Amino acid sequence: MTQLPLLELTSGFMSFKTFAAALDLEIFTRLAGGRQLTAEEFAAEAGLAPRPARVLLAACASLGLLGKSGDRYANSELAEEFLVIGKPQYFGGFVRFYDRQLYPAWHRVLEAIRSNTPVAWDPDAQDMAFSAADDAMTELFWEAMHALAGSTARALAGVYDFGPHRRLLDVGGGSGGFPVELCQRFPELSGVVYELPHVCPIAAGKIAAAGLASRIGTVAGDFRSDPALPSGFDVALLSQILHCQGEDANRALLDKVHAALTPGGAVLICELLLNEERTGPRAAALMGMNMLVGHFGGQNYTESEYRCWLEGAGFTDVRVVRFSSAGADGAVVARKPPGPA
Image (cartoon, rainbow, N blue to C red):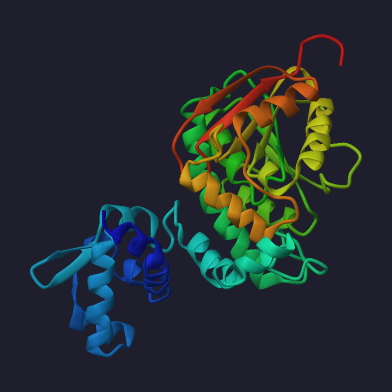
């Protein structure tokens, strides 16, 4: 037996903070397109002394973010695809949000555990979507979520056929990453992003930039307090929404989703799903910890918990489709029975 697994747990923050620093210094953007630099050349471009440049580049290479040929560093395939500013699937916004907002909050995780209260912000002033006045953090948060949503939507579309559907309701859909990706892939699909009033302009901008303003709209509202959701949809999506709330709030929201769907319509709950023993997977269990830090009542749930709530709301034919993505590892799918509502 060895202490190495404990050392890896203890030093995990070093990998993340190295990664975040590299992004802030735009290492991967500087090396875009197959460009290669020596440590000395990078130091000169980034305004660094030679020693920290050498140390940082070596660390990034050890993390699989850079490769090296002779004395020159270049992007790995992973970095070239996801870490170059301006690339369609740029992941940097997500990393920066975690670095600047969530990493400091995790210093207070013991307080969150003991108090059962979020510590990522002042709960009397803000929530996870941030206030309309907090422009910088709102932009950072939704840039992070947009990067995650698009890649998760691509994975979901690989295992669930949206072709038969015509109208999608994305509940709490943020910047519109899911409907943008799905409407690009399924030409007969249109959609609505139902979001808080100060988030709708962000979604509208992303939708317009994708050339989909004629097929995807926004509706301002708050699914937590509004008595009903927009109606007349044959498919509804809840992506990383239910893990933000407790059971009572989730049951109430699923009742609203049921009412919003046409008979025979489908709902998809897209999440990192805990196993039934509640021992993993690690990504789902640790996201539950993140919800403890960030939300009242939030945690990650098992397939059977979602099944129970869906059936309680009147849904049938509950099943799970599995896939692999950074944002979710499966979707719990259910149907509203055909016939009168």
